[in-house]
Image 1: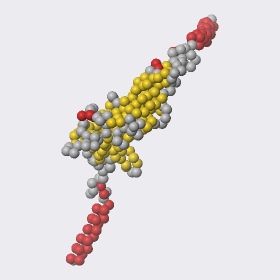
Image 2: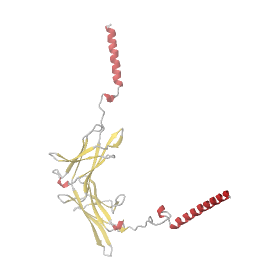
Image 3: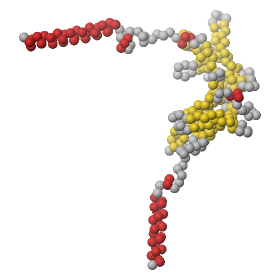
Length: 294
């Protein structure tokens, strides 16, 4: 009898183990969270703004996708403490921007670097993540120079000086790009880039045949994605472009214009044809009624 009981207990225990093994694994284990990757760039437009551009992504099923609607905190790091400057939330594409209101008032380290951390604290779906960026503050002083070449022709150039802010130390050997703003994207002017001299200066000669609305052109001098300074941009507003002459016939009466701008002769001819056709039909109908009554 005791032997039969032991066999029954063993049988029930085996069935229990098999049943537990068939249950979904997530019933007994915490669901794994997805990692988050944060990419961070810094852009300074002289006299306009200093901005962090943030992009968050994750890898799910071997595919990279954006992480939307997560809150990120931005802090200025020092040896003693991390000062939270503010928070942003990513959009549906995983992007977010954060503007530094007054960079000069923030803390720097002994090497004159600003240190910042972008922090995500994690949630039910994603692990916590952070990204650190450090850079020095730089500035570009740019201006338009116009000179007479001695033959009555005006030669226009952009002169720019790249310096480290605070110390006004010239930055030598940096590559600056000169470009003019266009509707879709800037157009490079002259060489692909100009390398700064010992005093941090460059000189880029400009073309005189660039069209602009009312002759106005905005030139950009750009230090792009420097390891020490990030992206720094200076904008020079000028009036040296060739004025654009509007040759559009949009507001004129043409065959290829809108219905409201159709040529007068076409409108008259069309309405005359319609009047003749409908007049003839009405006259025939009238005669049919007369024949029927007679």
